[in-house]
Image (cartoon, rainbow, N blue to C red; front, side):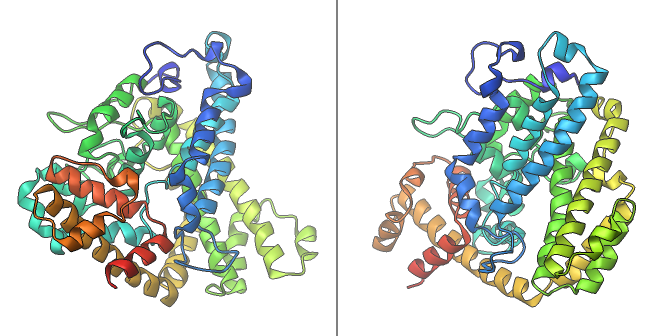
Amino acid sequence: MHWEQLLSLKRQGDKGKRLRIEQDDTRLGFEVDYDRIIFSAAFRSLQDKTQVIPLSKTDFVHTRLTHSLEVSVVGRSIGRLVGKKIIEKYPHLQEIHGYQANDFGAIVAAAALSHDIGNPPFGHSGEKAIGEYFSIGNGLQYKNQLTPKEWQDLIDFEGNANGFSVLTSSRPGIEGSIRLTYAVLGAYMKYPKESLPKKPTPNIADKKYGFFQTDKEFFQEVADELGLIRNKTGNDIGYERHPLAYLVEAADDICYTIIDFEDGINLGLVSEDFALEYLIKLVKDTIDTSKYKTLTTKEDRISYLRALAIGNLINDAVRVFVENEEAILKGEFPYALMDKSKYKAQIDDIIQLSVKKIYQSREVIEKELSGYQIINNLLDKFSTAYNNDFEGKATNYDTLLLKILPEKHLIKKESTYERLLHICHFVSMLTDGKAVLYNKIVTA
């Protein structure tokens, strides 16, 4: 892979080239991407979507929106630091093409901002709930009407693939959704493959999938424009990652490791003594003990350690990337950056404690159980109504139910797969609160 291609400013529908050297630095294309994401309805909905603690009314607990903003900030820092090293190593990128170190930060920041934009309500249990509706629920009735890959899309419903669809799918009058640059889309694509074959290799890029069958053609267009390396044969579509996707992933890994942990501490799910023991292992080389001793509240102490920990992990992610940049460009780095971090043992310890104390806490489990029931119910009611309407068998209840669908979802879809995916998309774009409200309506 070559940086000149990987940093493409092209957007969906462009007929000609967009050259970096001709860009207005006061409205750089990659920064325009960030603005478009911020102003999108899908991004705004993240303010009422679960990060760790579902439906929490506590002001210091993160939502998907605050998490995404923080991942974006961390990603921008990592991107700029990497960009500085890349420009130093390949000066022609700046001298001939006009790229700047901050361009890398802008690309990663925009991709990171959107990294959770396709996630359903109620956290990761929302993805599982959608998948299980089809694999073991009433949705199983549709299996024989779908191809194996279409079926896999549904039973392994994936927020990353849904996000790609949110960012790129056209609807009447809206060509290409918010039309991001291909560089940002490439950095967004953590799992550049289709749903089958499932986990064919230990390569981190094969861990999940990144696009639905409806989006395959455009996904390939983006990958080919960026010069991503094909790694599947025959009719199976898959690529090695865009190098900057590693940075987006690292930013996400850093934030959920440290900030989810901080949420657990603030909620009292993790004791301060435990927290200090775990965090100090990450910051022992950079902590100012005299300053630390002046902090009198738990919140200030944890905040100080969190900031130091994130700074150390950012610098280490940059180190791992720069040391392996040539292998990454060749498609020969099958790991997440943080898997090769010198802090991996400390990260693993924090995640293990978080799983035990936070992710498996009673409050989280109770809300996830509610989420399962709500999502299952909404999928069943709306899928049945939508399919019955298409087949001319709609009951009066079906007709009334479809009238409460948002206007942009009142679109005819010809195939069973497209109709089912359309309803999955509608449910996945609901906020936690809206999902609860819709469920009250359909069960009244």
